[in-house]
Image 1 (cartoon, rainbow, N blue to C red):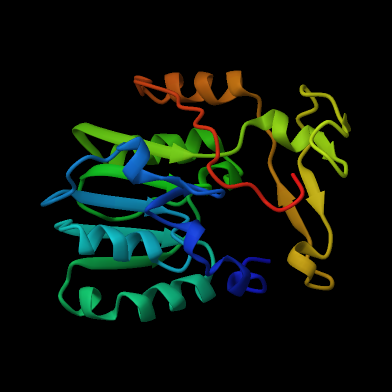
Image 2 (tube, rainbow, N blue to C red; image 1 turned 90 degrees about the horizontal axis):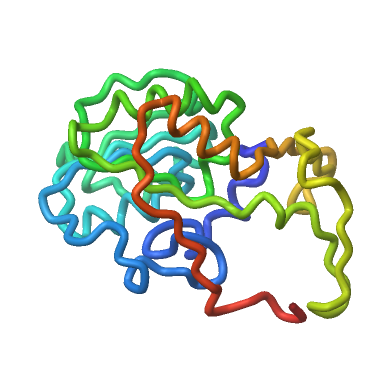
Length: 218
């Protein structure tokens, strides 16, 4: 699926300085602070835009992984010089498989962690990648978002499924690609917090920034 649709996600808003679609940016949230000399792992790195951003900001080392070989190929092309200089190392790997890397200051994932098929395993590995005072920073949509079916206006919406229905969403012809089926796992907010707690994370903050740009017609 991700190999087939990789071109659709090779766009500016899929990586830093954006934390999410609709122009939610690092310069407004300041979640990372000064990255000079810091080490990073990005999960679901896509076409390597965040990797490029971090290196340009002075990161010491960036590891990055994505399940799609097509995305890794794009990331390699975008970050060729940094790879040759041993500042970037890429892996074609799902989040649920252990990476052999040195411990890092930050693990990040931008609209990626929600695709995991095994939260406990993914979170356990993420915890193991971090230094003692390391941070895990990630973004994902609020689960209620996928339960709404939009109409022609903001007020013209309806609830199409229960918030507590934990069955995955199945999208056919994903991104308009005929025959490409996409399964999106579904988890409530409480599930995410429970799994973070079980993995040994301390939650410092949860942020719900309003978008500064919305798609036309919403």
